[in-house]
Amino acid sequence: MGNKLDTDTPIYIKVSTKDNTAIIVNSGGLTKGAKFSCGLALNERIPEGHKVALCNIAAEEEIIRYGEVIGYAKDHIKKGSWIRESLVDMPSPPGLDNLPFSTNLVDVSPLEEGFTFLGYRNSDGSVGTKNILGITTSVQCVVGVLEYAVKRIKEDLLPRFPNVDDVVALNHNYGCGVAINAPDATIPIRTIQNLAKHPNFGGEVMIIGLGCEKLIPQRLNDGEDNDNILTLQNESGFVNMVQSIINMAEERLDKLDKRKREVCSVSDLVIGVQCGGSDAFSGVTANPALGFATDLLVRAGATVLFSEVTEVRDAVHLLTPRAATKEVGDSLIREMKWYDNYLNKGQADRSANPSPGNKRGGLSNVVEKSLGSIVKSGTLPITDVLAPGEKVKKKGLTFAATPASDFVCGTLQLASGIHLQVFTTGRGTPYNLPIAPVLKVSTRNTLQEQWHDLIDINAGKIANGEATIEEIGWEIFKDILEVASGTKKTWADKWGIHNDLALFNPSPVT
Image (cartoon, rainbow, N blue to C red; front, side, top):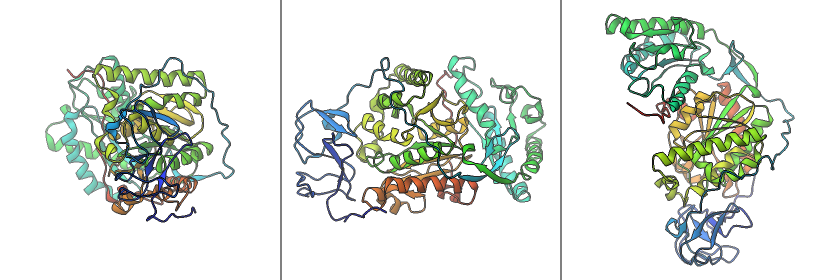
């Protein structure tokens, strides 16, 4: 373990030797006059996680954190002063046309130990980490009936099938009243298609449709026979609708109940990484530890998805050198440009991110947030890029393009096939996914203490020297294997809480 620092002693964290700013570590912040061991004294109170000027910074001079420019001083900032958001002008985003590709590629050395987990082997060769009956909807109109039926299934049927973990309705607000043939409609449609075939469903597809929707259920069924589809407009009344859903579910529950866990290689895992409710500690505690775990997973043969385009865009110049091939680099730029155009259409600018909570946690702008966010991706080459909602195609580290919204990102990563998501947070969120567990990692000790029954791993110990990045990284890696094996539950799964699925639909609503 690391050497724990005295929490009564003023502490700051400076990431790079180039930095002219650092963040305050002490819980509750520090008062005016607080003096660090290096001799730096504060000339005003600075909250926990917020930035202190390590030297005098002249007006229009660069403000540097992570060894990168996060902004320019609007006015002269004195040494020992609080670098508030209002004092920082945001720099322009990196251009996308002349970025270096494949200039910083690290060899992927396999782990010496062959790590395994207990999973459910599917007939198509994929592996599940849960045993769930997933019921897909083709249109929002059927949700009320399906929810009623699912309640009955859980109460009356599920106790008879002890090997089945849950019954989940894949509800969404798509399917009708939409421009179904618009070019960008491919995003929500392929998302629903891929969700219906998630590996945790064991190949048992079940689709509930209405009968007059634009997204016909057959599009979600690979054009196969209609035994997997129930159309409510063909049923005679509410009671028959519900009973037909129950009968259809019972057939599939019987098959799922026969699934057994077996030893599987870590190379069968697809892990998503995401951050939400971020703060200034995210980029120095939880995200670096998760990045270390990401490298371990990739070295073990697994697939790891990192996402959130708006939290990558301002640090993309640090990612393209890690593109394994020119094709990967071109695909990364393609997704950045697509999202730039998407935001421009909506007349949204980069200042829409970070959120007010992020700012209260010490993040001044999206540049600083991005530099801390990309650390989750580790250090190894990026082997593939996915458009929103696309299924995983390759092993290794993949950039899966998604919005930064927790719920939308989570839904799209599920469609891509993640078995589990590791979610770092500094401000805290009870967010969870209905299909795959979410392992929460706190960036600071105070959040772990406040949310002791929601946070699974505390990376805040890194800030005060109680643990190292590597130690927390290994803890994350080993917890992933336990949760994937079903031998350990995340706090959110223990409480049975989850967020609704949220489709990304950039096409028009009619």
